[in-house]
Amino acid sequence: MEEFDYIIVGAGSAGCVLANRLSAESLNRVLLVEAGGGDQHLFVQMPTALSYPMAMNRFNWGYYSDPEPGLDGRRISCPRGKGLGGTSSINGMVYVRGNAQDYEEWESLGAAGWGYRDCLPYFKRAESWVGGGDRYRGESGPLGVSAGNEMRLNPLYRAFIDAGVEAGYPETSDYNAEFQEGFGPMHMTVRDGMRESTSRAYLKPVRHRRNLEVLTRAHVQHIELDGDRATGISVEVLARTRAIRARKEVILAAGSIASPALLQRSGIGHHAHLQSVGITPTHSLPGVGENLQDHLEVYFQFHCKESVSLNNKLDALSKGLIGARWLLFKDGLGATNHFESCAFIRSRAGLKSPDIQYHFLPAAMRYDGTPSIAGHGFQVHVGPNKPKSRGQIRITAGNAAAAPSIKFNYYQHEDDIAAWQQCIHLTREIMRQPAMAAYNGGELQPGPEVQSEDEIDAWLKQNIESAYHPAGTCRMGPASDPMAVVDTAGCVHGIDRLRVVDASIFPSLPNGNINAPVIMAAEKLADAILHKSPLPPAEVPIHLPQNWETQQR
Image (cartoon, rainbow, N blue to C red; front, side):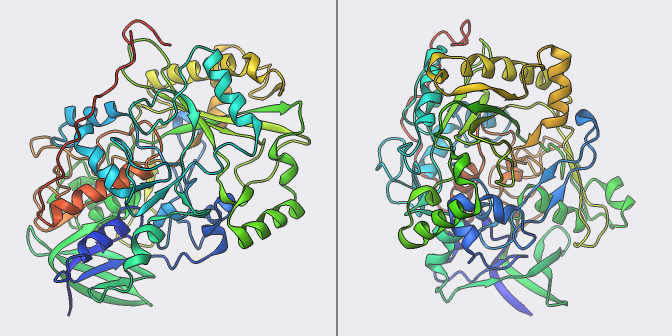
């Protein structure tokens, strides 16, 4: 039987980080197992082509939710990356660490040692920020982070920021540093004009290590257990099942959908559910697959009165020219995700941190990258970032090929519904500001006919989409919490030598895109796996907005 010290299941945002850090110690023999294939494809590497790999079965598992009761029974797309780099190879490349208060919340929910000052050193260790290092930013980490074209190529980016300031919100020069709240430039995992997936940043530089083996197109069927100890995996490669032994640990880094599903297929979860799908229960952990949460968004679209939007760049000829320039020089419109300005705001007084996020795009287009209007336009993506609705992941069969049941229970909690109404009102107020007057040619979506609370509610139910940030399905917490799945070191409660390291361990969603927090968590838990002392907590202030208890802005 093949043996390794560490078996890592999933070569995504966390798995590539772990493969790099664990194999850095030459005595460790490390196996990285990935169900998909490689990531060497033009559409993966070129930032502007981000909509294409997400639409390809080669790179996307293509999950859909069950019919969502709160969204008129619609099934919502839940893309997850398949192949080296995982979802970091198909995502929007937006780099957001979240707010300091997010990690203070994690501690309050039972994740001791995961406060902001504990996590910041690992954000810094991961990062190579184009602007250089300081108290908040890293300068020599594996992960390249930039600001795309720094808003130089389109005046609409600056107009959006100015509109936010005119509406009474602050301007922030670096939302990943001390002051997240406000309007400012957006950061992205793009280095030298190319997508900076964790495969490129962490795995590619160390593939040559003799103690690291990468096994692709390998589907893990279940975790091998000997009583209350994980001993290895059963994996299918080329229609042949192999048993591989782990001398030290099995580490699940398959993501918020696949990691709980793999635990359930291995008999770890809620006994009644496992028995209902023909799985013999081996260990009771009712929290496996529960606590599912996600960010939602809609996009407002507007006519643009000036011929400055990207809508005239969406035809085949323009795309070809953009692609050719990118191939030659790795710059221009091909070297960005086009979300170059953004905002984080509070929806009401009494909040310590923002709960609404904006992505601004100087084009009016569909999710597949095609124009949605004739002529020029622009759009702003918006959604509340602190949902209270919770769902679950449940396998439907013992076969790894069977897609799990995914139910988010979107838009169910009354606070979420109220937050969405406020999102609509605040966005309209911002887009009416003088800075947008030269460009705003009228609201296309939702449209001026959508005004009353009932009309907004009906429109939201038909137009809300996932922002693709599922998390929480193997959440951290103490053993005394019956719904906690792992401890603060990622170790599965009650099972020796089994760990989970991905977004599924988050107790709650951070305020922003989740790729950066996943990478941070993998960096932090790599130290725990190697029995290293954690990095010293950062000595930085934790910002609170002035008069936050009584003022919204």
